[in-house]
Length: 93
Image 1 (tube, one colour):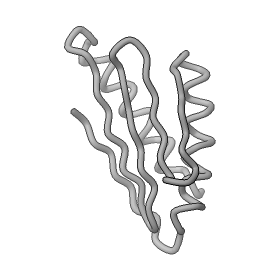
Image 2: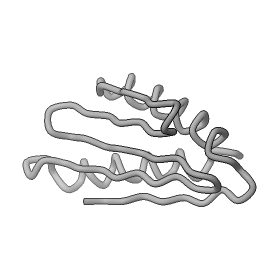
Image 3: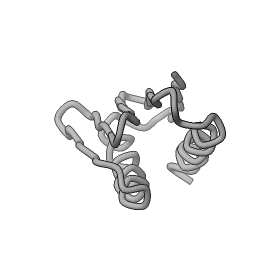
């Protein structure tokens, strides 16, 4: 399944986690997904009907793993992935 990784030189894990958390909060509310965050571990996960994602923020980077059930159309998977990538690209803009 898709893995998205973005580098943010000079940013620490806490700064990245806070920004990604804000993005995921808005995105999951819009899409009706369940969102759980772990501020101590700098991680978060989303889920709904077989769709799941997990992110881990570290110093200078974030990694997001997405998992979709086989029945989800490829176009929908691509749209979700591109939306997340676009939001991550503007994270500190």
